[in-house]
Image (cartoon, rainbow, N blue to C red):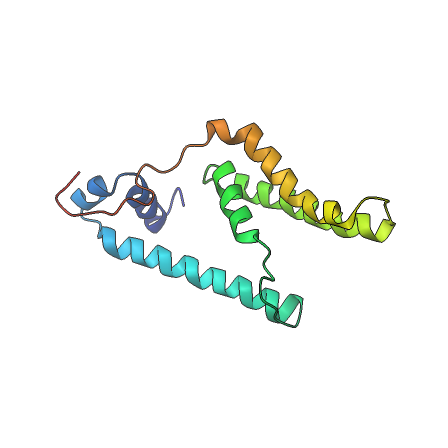
Length: 146
């Protein structure tokens, strides 16, 4: 993302779309491309979960993990290495729930299933002060207006 042409354009459109537009980048095309790519990757993740991992589909099988992914990206400050480390932390906490249940720890199963989400909330409370969002996040862009 930091050294490729498309990565720099995506970052420029996310931070300062008017500057990217002034330099000749088609802001609308980049935004639609990234939204479509994100939807495609989310669909692949859902298909893997339903077909590859569990081999069946039930409603609410994701259990709020999409929100956890958003929090991990925010905590990783949009840096792929940091986001990967945050995802590993959540994955470790998620696998810890299975290990605790297999070991027969005398804790309520509801509390055990809640531990990955508690880990992410604790990380959010500790590290969220230094999180900087992209300045043009969720702001519609109109050409000619700053």
